Length: 129
Image (cartoon, rainbow, N blue to C red; front, top):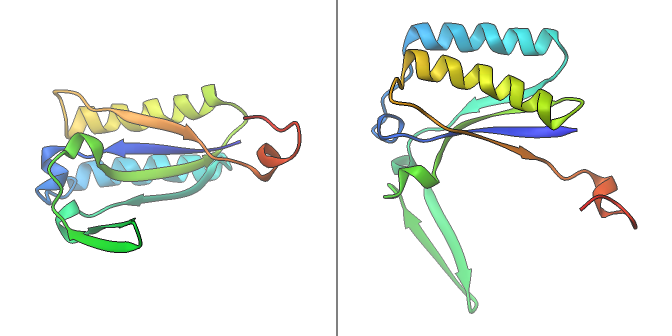
């Protein structure tokens, strides 16, 4: 099963504050551990929404709105993709990521979301929904 571990944006990440070198080193070590365990598919950080855009299409009209976007709680700062045996295993890895973030950058707390990716078998007749 593949899961995306989504790191939510914060005021700091939206302000363009880069992670500390200590956090980057710890995350690098955790990513290396996940790679050695054979579960890491990818891990990336995203720049602030001020460097992005939203594209929408309604009634045949395309609209592009440049960032920044106001609701940082609805934005993501980065993600990790893992392939694991269960949701519980994905949550365990997510918990380790969250502990690093809270310890080094967000003592007030942070939130991570764990989402299962669709597999082709989910779309087969009788597949899981």
